[in-house]
Image 1 (cartoon, each protein chain N blue to C red):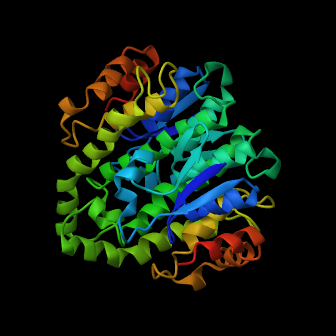
Image 2: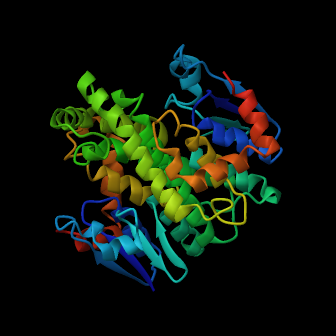
Length: 206
Length: 206
């Protein structure tokens, strides 16, 4: 049985959805970020990075959403959540998840986690003001170039889709103009029609 | 034949080394960042993100270092640069490349690319001051938890190694205390003993 450590409102939602989609036998454990549980000695022993998600398997702990998603897709091959037999198509998929991880999520993180890169209140305020623009720019490229439709990779639903949905959940709070992202909004609506997505979104409600 | 777009001093070095290690038939094309060539209309047509690396293949363009590295390893399987038949081991490898991409490289990027997330000179100065600490913390975890030795994944040389070497090239300029990273420094020395690494480092010299 897998154990997934998550917290509501985080990128762990993507891996949580993926586990549900493949019908994995898993337990989802909620951390309380308000109580800084991710930095408790117990949790740091599991994930020294003090972040979610962390996926506990019988071979050890996995971290980093792009890696966990690919692991789930390759372990539950029959669910066909990644084109594992085609290195080029897999690389296109992984370019998308890497972009979400290191560009779009990072832009969003400057809203509440500016202390990772700066120390002054004026810097935090400056960063917060720019989030609608930086996240908006990231999603503009997704809307224009990356989201083929109906799913990210086109006809096939893949691990890209829970991840796009997850990061997209933050758009409203990030102050991005949703009217400029019709394909992303249609994707969100399509995701919410999936039973696995609805179940996990409900479970992660605060 | 592959075409790799790179610029000296960037993370493209990792993919460049990997192509050389596997004996791929490739051409390396240098972009002039001082002339903002990465944002020229010609290059944006190739990579709308205006970044390096970009790898042109006969099936299309790949971006994002973690995706390109895995693609190279899976396309040139005989070089054994990734444990492609073991989803857990591959996920551990990809957790490492994802960490470099979205945590360590991002920390470094706040030194010269703060304008991605802020607008004020005082913010840029604040971010610059924190780089030794944020990059140092990223490498402290690598030194303590991730670099098994002699290579990142242990006995096997993988795509993690050119990538660690590449990000590690910036440590000196980032003001990190190298004496605190003996394993990382030994890894750098070991990398520079490899003909492929020496050849590419020489080729990328300014």
